[in-house]
Figure (tube, rainbow, N blue to C red):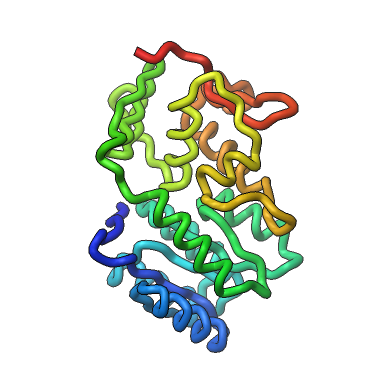
Length: 240
C-alpha cells in the first residue's frame, strides 16, 4: 500500500538513523525545505512509525540497533511501495546491492551532503506524483501497464511494483525499441545526472527486479532487453 503525496504539502519524510547528529542535521535541512519530518533511532521504532505515520518517503540507515535497515526494508516491501532511500557506509558495496535487491529505490553514501540527500528526495517524490494529463494504457501481449492508476497487470493478476520500478518500466515501455544508456535512465527515472558519485548498478538491479516480476524467463528476457554497448530497451511492439 502506498498512500502517495499530499499535493498541498511537500510530503512527510521518515528519517531513521541511530546517530543523533545525522537525524538532527537531516531533519533541520528537510524542514527548512518545507517537508514534514518524523525520526526514528532504531529499526523497531522505524517499523512502528511506517505504520502510524504513513510517510511519503523513508530515509533509512542500514546499520541500526534492534532491527537493521535491510530487515526494515524487507518488512516494508512485504505490503508497501513507499520509496526508500538507504544511507550506507562508503565501503559497504555488498550491502548497497542487497538493499536494492530488497526493494530500496536509491542510496546515499556516508558521509553525505544534506543538500545531495534533499535533491535525491525531491527527485524521487517529483517522479511519483501522478500527472493526470499523461494517463495512458500500454498493452503488450498479456501485460497491461496503466500509467494513470500506476498499475501493472499480467492477464487479470496484479503485479506489485515499487514506485521507482514502475517509473523505469513506464519510461522503457513508452518508448519501445529505443535504447537508453544507464546514465540516461538515472537522469530520467531517478532525477539526477551521472557523476563520479553515481553508481549505475542502481539501474542494473532495478532492471533485474523488473525482469523477475514481468518475464516468463528472467534469464532470457523478451520484454526488457539488453541493448549491447548501450543499456536497456523495451521490445519493439506496435503502439495502437
